[in-house]
Length: 105
Image 1 (tube, rainbow, N blue to C red):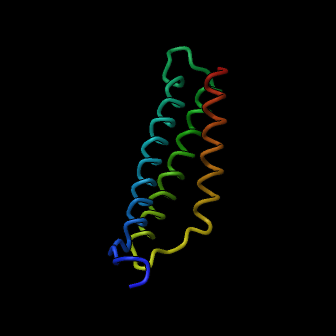
Image 2: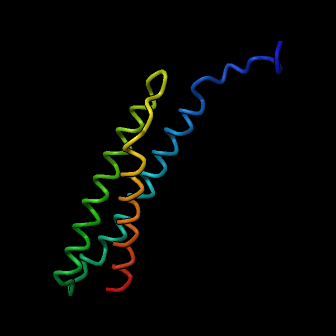
């Protein structure tokens, strides 16, 4: 034996990564809902509605990418996320900017 017994842990890292994508999608849901909340005030203006619409569009795109990436991790061997990871990072940054706009409104 070289290096010890076999662990049989094949695919566990893909499962952990898949669960991390799910958690990130859930946190994006919370941020998207909080960013849309000011649009439902009685005195909300057009800017609040535009920020809310942009936040919901970014949320839909984030969830779609996370679902696709999670599905790609189910296959054996897991498919690499070449385009999904940078796109998700840019959308998360855009959602953070929208959250900052909500605070400034």
